[in-house]
Length: 467
Ligand code: AMP
Ligand code: ZN
Image (cartoon, rainbow, N blue to C red; front, side, top):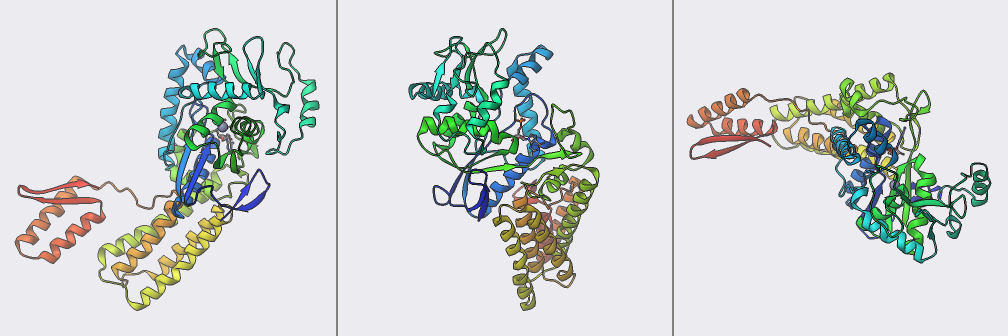
């Protein structure tokens, strides 16, 4: 499996630090509002990366934070006249709801910056001890950027170019030794949330949060660090400077960055005001369509959001769901094991799995992986019919379901089965049993099972529950 590493600027073979295990850190959102669909792009693509790694048999430790203390959160809290903590708590809950609707798996851990302050104080103290950081007179702690010899290695920026760029915009009154130095800890302003520290009552800078959370939950050295491409500089560059100086080890082995979701070829962003929230899109479309739309492009290619492409994604998804439903119906009405011919056909369908894997192995090329799924769909539609055995329909359904699950696409249509329908089938099964027609009784049990209804025969009669 090859992936494109921003750090080395080439596709590399993926070799995890620990065989069979992957540690992965994905920078999460700052929670001061509903997330927009641009923010959803890294969530969806890196969830798909995780799912594929799991499909390949890796045990993935997936950590994604919430930045729950920040200028924007504080501003929103002031506007609403409520504590910053309440704003963050509300939008974390809303974000988790959107993630669930997008079928993004919950992370192994979702750390919150405000819960990790002791670790941050520790790392900042460590950096000061090692000479990589210093406290200014007002209690601000800065990172001494020039001390880190490798600074710029991720973004490819040259420190002297940065220096001359910064000279013009040097802010007077700042107590930095060097304009390139960045903040690790800053003093509170009136009314802001703060924590005690050896330097001043204050709060952490954004970059230190991720270095500390990655270290605590994944260790000094991690396999994959990911986020949107706007995070390469300065956020990820600064994370590297902090973590490598503090830990004395390389930080992340592979750096993955998704390209932007655009509108009219401009980055969708809150500050430009050209965004749609996931919530808004969810009112117009099934969010499975949004997920499918995101995966129709390679994650490193810019993607322009628009009604036409969403419609195409909706149609494509429908084709897959219809094929799955068709197989399900065939399975319910058919019976028996695969014929020899079917066994051969099923083996033949393995070529689409292979194509799917080859695409995903090539830097998670979901666009090509989706094409492989379409080819499998076509194969299912042409080879499974009313004459097929149940085993054949089931096997194809399983194969289609497995590939879709890697993409996070749910093929099981959630049709609301009414209680009355269930009760009616259960009564019919009881009748069949009374008449000693056990074959029919078993058939009904299977039919109910396919609808997700589990039966339990008790002394008091039959009870049922939804699986
Ligand atoms: P933020 O809350 O702005 O820190 O963003 C959270 C995540 O969303 C980061 O990984 C960003 O890089 C990513 N992101 C923000 N806007 C976009 C966009 N328009 N397209 C793709 N990713 C984005
Ligand atoms: Zn981060």
